[in-house]
Length: 130
Image 1 (cartoon, rainbow, N blue to C red):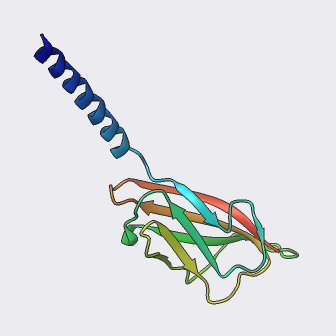
Image 2 (image 1 turned 60 degrees about the horizontal axis):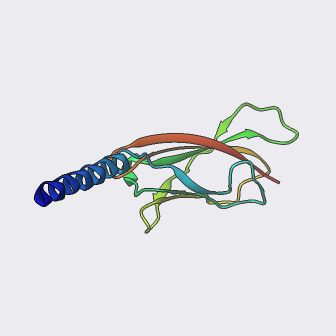
């Protein structure tokens, strides 16, 4: 009888462990922190830095930056050229560095990433430069 109960306990523990592994493996990466942060008002940043909860695949991950508003000027959205994101040494952070500080206005950050477990996500947010 003891042997049977031991086997049942081992089976239950193994089943619970496999359920936890399956859940963790199916998790999607998410944006953990952003600099500048969503809805922030900042002074002339020279880069955008996005940290995610999982390691990323650099060649399938990127950042696009669009100026959506400039004080005193009527304009449509203007995509910022030359924005290239690189993967930081931690493997989880994308960094887009600009040749010059950003001008006064409102900016939209669009990002797309693929984590090392092949999950693809995308998102966006805005911030203002004063």
